[in-house]
Image 1: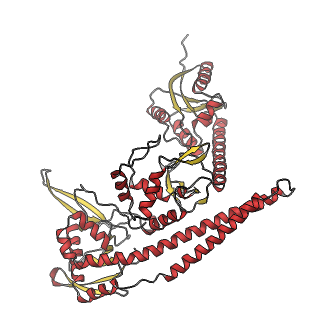
Image 2: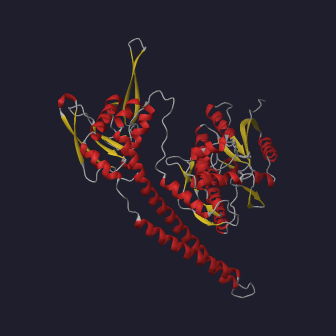
Length: 563
């Protein structure tokens, strides 16, 4: 009598900390599935284990992904994958069902031993659909409940969990000042607010004075970076506040399981029960400065770049309006050897409005556009009328009285709101617990207090924004003065600058360059240039002689937004 060949199967095991506490260890799952395979006469030809991996999505589960590849390759000719419970296979309903479909396309079905489910049967497929969807709903409910609990902790001024911010130590769930780390934090705020140093300058100062980050389990070095310094400056915990929702997780559009962390401007801010490291006034002053300079940071061109594209991002595509960037074209001889490199500005076919792709494929030679822009600026500043206007603008006084009135209003409102908050807190403390109406009165007062927290947060945000506007306007005159002085010596400076320095200078002077869709018969590409300063309230025309002796009229207008 011929011996019947056994059905081949894989077993997949995944265990979390929660399951271990419930007695579902890796060994326990493995033993249960081996017993099931023995009882049914199955041959286990492969074991795949993912210990401690999240079931939220399939990505990141290396053993699982390896198993799926083996199934697709038909490596062992298996008919089933055994899992302990459906929740071990994945908690995202879409992932479970799509993965199961892929398995079935290769003739492999899923058996959930503990749940008694076999996807090769119609009833089993239905149960998988239902249970995976239920698991996803339960996970979302847990997430919402957890979030609500964290929001409540934040409203009460308590730390929400996770690593303690630099300068603090977490003791019994409460933030306590770490006297070894705190001096560095205080120094960062002092240098930024009172000495007007930027992030990079502060980082260099700390390094030069031997001030290093204390080593932590989550630290990646002992030097303070400019990015890390800015994170410290932005964090309200240092002025005695507790924030919740400063960052949020959002799904990457067009993907199933990709997420990213993004900053949120709309977050909860409440008085913390911990001791602040810096005065509230210093933290607010830091936010004002950060906000006023938010649009003034730009990446420096790579120091070792093969070629510097002077107008990269500044020149705009005539079809979609996106920035045009450098494109390199390598010309080769018939034998394949390199002949010469050519450089162009081209639109990288970015999205248009409503998601359409840009079809503008014209490329503009870099040397042609770069030299035309320099020539235009030199001709512009040589005009006596422009020189007179520059002098006029330098002497212009900027009126910020309206903004100051607004600031005064917000500060007055804030004082009133703080007083109301203090009174409410006092009322809550004075309630008699033995009073039969105690719980209802406390609920009413708590609700009023929470609403007041929201109002205070709104007012504080409006105040910071208003102060930032005023500071930016006041700084604008200084910036304009510098730009005007650069312009008066532009030709001399430009002649001795490196390409990287030219790029930085042009980014400082010019907000955008608009070009024609096609080169004009005169050879001209440039339609208009917008400068990062108020050249004129009205249009200013100048003529530029280009190829063939033809005259092209160039229109220079004021940049649309304040820089």
